[in-house]
Length: 89
Image (cartoon, rainbow, N blue to C red; front, side):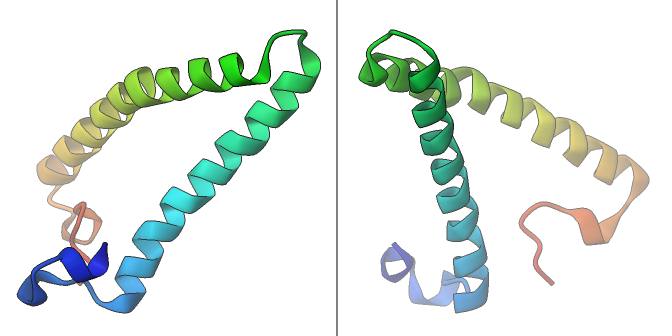
């Protein structure tokens, strides 16, 4: 994915690694949570995974969006320059 970004907008390797590692850690957490939950129930593990994925992709994203908007508004209001999203210094 990094090589598909325009050369003048490409993130440094360190920033790219930190961004992608957050996604990988989140996916690993969801995977192991689904494996654990499937052992607790008699349901089909694939069905549980689909339900968890859909909830994460809809409600989870809405919660994250609302949280980022709220924190961004607070950061703008308090003028905390070092806490702006996407600003790596």
